[in-house]
View 1 (cartoon, rainbow, N blue to C red):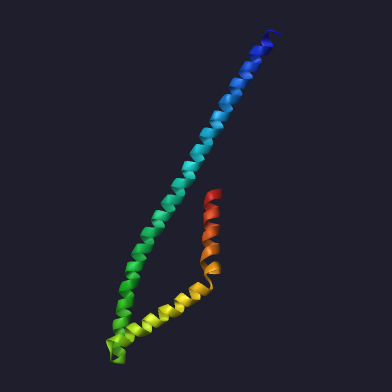
View 2 (view 1 turned 135 degrees about the horizontal axis):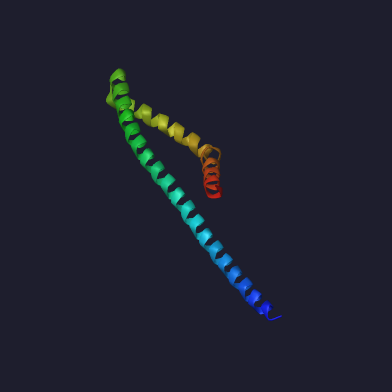
Length: 113
Protein backbone atom coordinates (compact mmCIF):
# COMPACT_ATOMS: atom_id res chain seq x y z
CA UNK A 1 0.00 0.00 0.00
CA UNK A 2 2.96 2.25 0.52
CA UNK A 3 3.59 2.35 -3.26
CA UNK A 4 0.05 3.58 -4.05
CA UNK A 5 0.47 7.20 -2.81
CA UNK A 6 3.62 7.53 -4.90
CA UNK A 7 1.84 6.28 -8.01
CA UNK A 8 -1.07 8.69 -7.38
CA UNK A 9 1.40 11.54 -6.98
CA UNK A 10 3.14 10.51 -10.20
CA UNK A 11 -0.23 10.31 -11.92
CA UNK A 12 -1.11 13.87 -10.85
CA UNK A 13 2.32 15.09 -11.94
CA UNK A 14 1.92 13.42 -15.34
CA UNK A 15 -1.58 14.85 -15.71
CA UNK A 16 -0.27 18.31 -14.85
CA UNK A 17 2.49 17.95 -17.45
CA UNK A 18 -0.09 16.81 -20.01
CA UNK A 19 -2.33 19.82 -19.35
CA UNK A 20 0.64 22.18 -19.57
CA UNK A 21 1.70 20.62 -22.87
CA UNK A 22 -1.84 20.90 -24.27
CA UNK A 23 -2.02 24.59 -23.28
CA UNK A 24 1.35 25.22 -24.96
CA UNK A 25 0.16 23.41 -28.08
CA UNK A 26 -3.02 25.51 -28.17
CA UNK A 27 -0.97 28.70 -27.87
CA UNK A 28 1.31 27.62 -30.71
CA UNK A 29 -1.62 26.70 -32.94
CA UNK A 30 -3.25 30.07 -32.23
CA UNK A 31 -0.05 31.92 -33.08
CA UNK A 32 0.35 29.88 -36.27
CA UNK A 33 -3.21 30.59 -37.43
CA UNK A 34 -2.90 34.28 -36.57
CA UNK A 35 0.39 34.59 -38.42
CA UNK A 36 -1.07 32.81 -41.46
CA UNK A 37 -4.12 35.07 -41.55
CA UNK A 38 -2.07 38.25 -41.09
CA UNK A 39 0.42 37.17 -43.78
CA UNK A 40 -2.39 36.37 -46.21
CA UNK A 41 -4.09 39.69 -45.47
CA UNK A 42 -0.85 41.62 -45.93
CA UNK A 43 -0.08 39.90 -49.23
CA UNK A 44 -3.63 40.53 -50.41
CA UNK A 45 -3.45 44.21 -49.51
CA UNK A 46 -0.14 44.67 -51.33
CA UNK A 47 -1.45 42.92 -54.43
CA UNK A 48 -4.68 44.94 -54.27
CA UNK A 49 -2.71 48.20 -53.97
CA UNK A 50 -0.61 47.43 -57.04
CA UNK A 51 -3.67 46.30 -58.98
CA UNK A 52 -5.63 49.42 -58.02
CA UNK A 53 -2.75 51.66 -59.12
CA UNK A 54 -2.62 49.93 -62.52
CA UNK A 55 -6.41 50.00 -62.77
CA UNK A 56 -6.49 53.76 -62.19
CA UNK A 57 -3.85 54.39 -64.86
CA UNK A 58 -5.68 52.21 -67.38
CA UNK A 59 -8.98 53.95 -66.59
CA UNK A 60 -7.46 57.40 -67.02
CA UNK A 61 -6.12 56.31 -70.41
CA UNK A 62 -9.53 54.91 -71.36
CA UNK A 63 -11.25 58.14 -70.34
CA UNK A 64 -8.84 60.28 -72.34
CA UNK A 65 -9.07 57.98 -75.35
CA UNK A 66 -12.89 57.91 -75.28
CA UNK A 67 -12.92 61.68 -74.92
CA UNK A 68 -10.67 62.11 -77.94
CA UNK A 69 -12.81 59.71 -80.00
CA UNK A 70 -16.03 61.53 -79.01
CA UNK A 71 -14.59 65.03 -79.43
CA UNK A 72 -14.72 66.24 -75.79
CA UNK A 73 -12.47 64.95 -73.01
CA UNK A 74 -15.21 65.07 -70.39
CA UNK A 75 -17.42 62.70 -72.42
CA UNK A 76 -14.97 59.89 -71.77
CA UNK A 77 -14.88 60.61 -68.03
CA UNK A 78 -18.68 60.64 -67.78
CA UNK A 79 -19.03 57.40 -69.73
CA UNK A 80 -16.45 55.57 -67.60
CA UNK A 81 -17.92 57.08 -64.41
CA UNK A 82 -21.40 55.90 -65.41
CA UNK A 83 -20.04 52.44 -66.11
CA UNK A 84 -18.58 52.30 -62.58
CA UNK A 85 -21.85 53.50 -61.07
CA UNK A 86 -23.58 50.61 -62.85
CA UNK A 87 -20.97 48.13 -61.61
CA UNK A 88 -21.24 49.56 -58.08
CA UNK A 89 -25.02 49.10 -58.15
CA UNK A 90 -24.59 45.46 -59.17
CA UNK A 91 -22.07 44.89 -56.39
CA UNK A 92 -24.45 46.40 -53.81
CA UNK A 93 -27.30 44.24 -55.11
CA UNK A 94 -25.28 41.01 -55.00
CA UNK A 95 -22.86 41.76 -52.13
CA UNK A 96 -23.91 38.75 -50.04
CA UNK A 97 -23.41 36.27 -52.86
CA UNK A 98 -20.29 37.85 -54.38
CA UNK A 99 -18.45 39.14 -51.30
CA UNK A 100 -19.78 38.10 -47.87
CA UNK A 101 -20.19 34.38 -48.51
CA UNK A 102 -16.83 33.79 -50.27
CA UNK A 103 -14.89 35.88 -47.73
CA UNK A 104 -16.64 34.15 -44.83
CA UNK A 105 -15.87 30.73 -46.32
CA UNK A 106 -12.23 31.71 -46.85
CA UNK A 107 -11.84 32.84 -43.24
CA UNK A 108 -13.44 29.63 -41.95
CA UNK A 109 -11.12 27.51 -44.15
CA UNK A 110 -8.07 29.42 -42.88
CA UNK A 111 -9.11 28.99 -39.26
CA UNK A 112 -9.92 25.28 -39.53
CA UNK A 113 -6.82 24.20 -41.50
